[in-house]
Image (cartoon, rainbow, N blue to C red; front, side):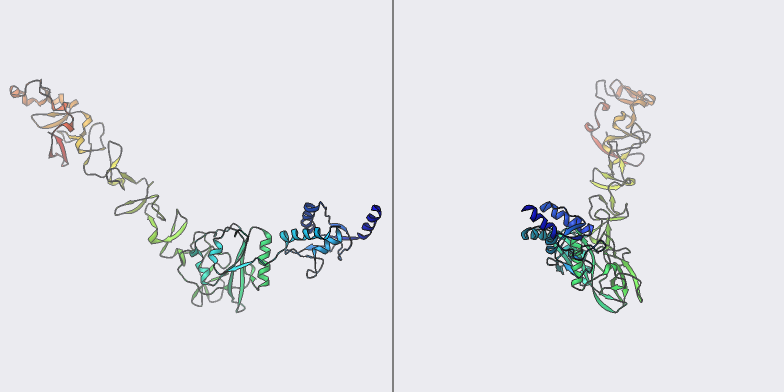
Length: 456
């Protein structure tokens, strides 16, 4: 009985059904995964549907099956009934799987006049404009553009494309155009192409005639990266977007194909006179909200990398020509600062340059310096002795040349030897044994004109 049934089945499968390799591959994957059926490019079948080796069963981009005339579509269920022994419910399962993966339906396609909202849903097709603020797309709002899109149940964007109302200059007629389609899955691209065709939209990415938009403004906070109508032209005494600048009586003004939010030449929008490109943020801001760096000759969006110098403006904090003043907590030009013995810079007038000693050339606070008899300024650490009778200072290492140290420990000029008996007795502390901070201070003007405080 089983052999008889097999013979009957084989007798039914007496036709040859030829299948296009691409179609065989996609449908074969579903049959293999669901029921372990191996599909080949030539199948035994109850019906051949008019196929032969040079005219095979195939499917359209939209998932429909046909042989020869694309308009004469064949239902997948009939094809499966002819070349398999699957039951009706099993065929339905295969049909459902095919629809989910390859059938294109426009039921879930949406259109929104809020272009910015769709851009902000999520990124798709490696778009550089995803998640930008609304003002980036104001120019599309001005020309009445809309967005057609597909999203999943979690509001994840699957595909999108701009829709424009444009004028075909050559034919003097208005057209509805669909711009570049952004997608992650080919089936979603095909879905939007089908929707556009059904709704009378022409693909402007391959449109050969000149197209222009309605008038646009000349000032925008930001501009998008436009894919097709990116030329800004002066046409009929108004600025418009176009897919070419080669239009009679039109003049090319600019191009909006910058990811920074500006235009190529700065004739409109964000690169206008009131806007500035900020290097750190890589976008355009109003000049009132940006900071011009004098040393870098560019704008920044914040002062994170800048310091302000009174009377001169902002400078890069890494600039070698400026330094921080520890005393005033401000920045100055190096030429206006003094490098101190302590290893920092200062603009204070209370710091004086040392002209002799171990720190020669550096600066120190006037409380820690001495003016010598020859007019040189030295540091307190250089070793200084006070000459009692002449009321002046000399380096201790040089004191023996012109002065003598009395038994009382103090230094005098040799002229004082004549009145040596009147000098203080031995045991009286020498002033040089006291630190400058322990000595009484008095104000005096030095020989070189510098105002100093010295120990008396």
